[in-house]
Length: 194
Image 1 (tube, rainbow, N blue to C red):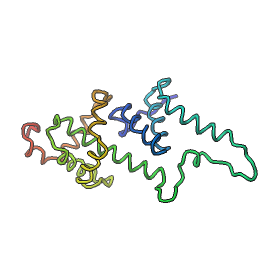
Image 2: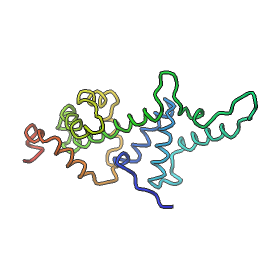
Image 3: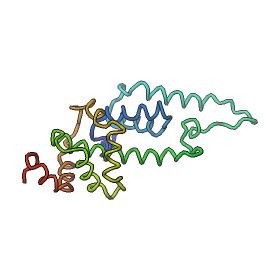
Image 4: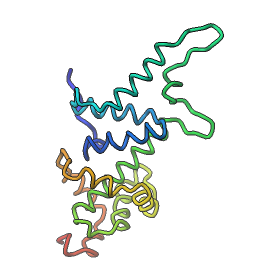
């Protein structure tokens, strides 16, 4: 079977994507995170190395679905209900929450690219300004909100855990980010040659 190459969202590192999905599924019950982790592992040809927690969660959900008694007075559970994909009271659909998480991940990858390129000399605030300008078309939050997301969710430590695991050449994305942040050349002349 021919598999597609991973898209932008997986480009930073496969282990990072999978590890970010784990607490979202295990702690929050976000089934979309489980699906994303499985698809990432499968698309990247991990084969028998797909993490055990992913396989166990899928096995448990499928077993629960298959072992239903199918009694007339008791309605069957759909996979949607077993995996909690349906909307609950005061809860966005799993897909809406997932799309917001993917957007944030993409923005944080961009912010990390700038910080990594400048060897962390560019402040988080300035990097957030660039990312906000670059990704205005995906309804990026304000630079202030990006800074809050960066610190509240401890993105720097997440990226540091997987440093050196990048599996692609991200220079094209970095070039686009730097074009969006032309003001960096004036503010940080030793890093960004004119």
